[in-house]
Length: 121
Image 1: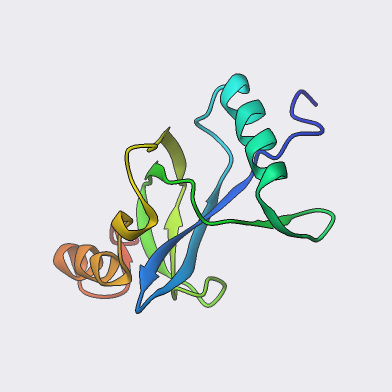
Image 2 (image 1 turned 30 degrees about the horizontal axis):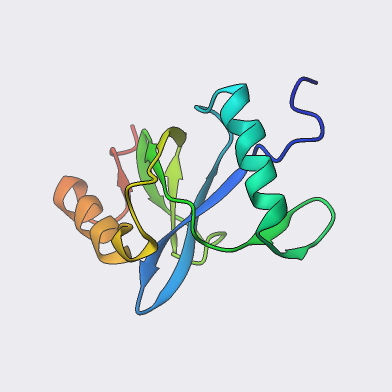
């Protein structure tokens, strides 16, 4: 496909007690040019290359829109964003400014308790 040879699936995290905890993965929302630029950046900032995926320096901040939050055993944060999509790259932000696990919990509890947001039907 048109994204062959580029790094186009991005795993993202929230912070908690000085650690980054995975909360989801998004692959939509960026233009082909942005994906190409991100690929080059990530190739230059790879910590470990595992073949099909890379661990990169955690310095790129993305703004993500999503349809909901649910508990998850799959992600280290304990939560997953439902249908996440990248809104934009936030070059004006640092890792210290990303959302926290506490923010995720507050959004979830404020809206429905502690299972999913929005509520399952």
